[in-house]
Length: 367
Image 1: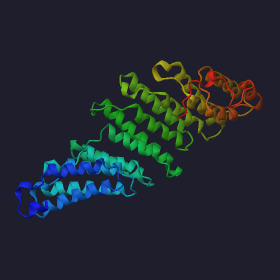
Image 2 (image 1 turned 180 degrees about the horizontal axis):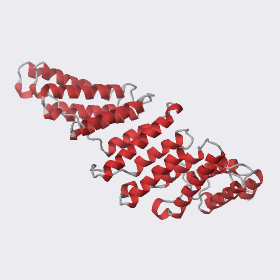
Image 3 (image 1 turned 90 degrees about the horizontal axis):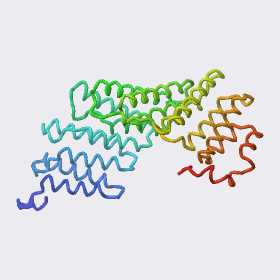
């Protein structure tokens, strides 16, 4: 660039020249790679704006490369810097009227990815705001380039599911995720989507009900699974429930904090969900050590200690777990909580945690 400004027109850097450098910084493993990539991008804008190089005007690819760099960055301010850069992109598009500078779904997804990695307690709120803005641009203004896609929704739902900033917001996050899933289902059935809802999206949403801390949330989790099953039965193979789908419902039941009546109902839902999974393992996969451990937790948390039903189901679930080689640390821990001392001793058959038969644990993968 310096030689070009001195008069050597044979070495004028063009868009491709700058893009190669930006891409190189994106591939860098350094902590400041995103910072350097953005500095190159800002230099391009300045050169074009000052009239020093008309070929330096960046395109959407340049912005997306830098946005992806911010999405990979672990710097605390990466999400806010990515958002600001997206604003710069839109402003430059408005000023130049260049169709090559229009933000796309890919641009927004990079910003959402950055927020998904943030420890900011408001990350999940920002993700919802961005999704709402994308939907507004798409549905109300007809901007097809920024239509939220399957990646968009997986990122947002994943951000909600991974956020542990405050237990007080659990029910809000679960309700937001449920609303998103209902909207996706409605649009899918209306033929408005060129993609399909999938198992990962449903599992993120279902898991949030289990963490909500709200009494009665097990009904919401079960309702979500029923809707997922309905879509699958109608031919949406992408949203086939798996062992996580069923275990999430059982976990939501086991977390019920209501009165005796509510806990009894929660146990019935947990048991029905468990039996549905084990009876249709060819369709949904085998119950794993987490499923069995969570079901034993449900016995311990939802049924009174003196209840014969608690003893019966604890024995039956543990014996089935042993037969399927799924006795891991979680199962033994929850068995101790669910079983009486006498039942625990009898079920362990004289074994300790270290001496249980290999056949009891041969299928456990606790990595």
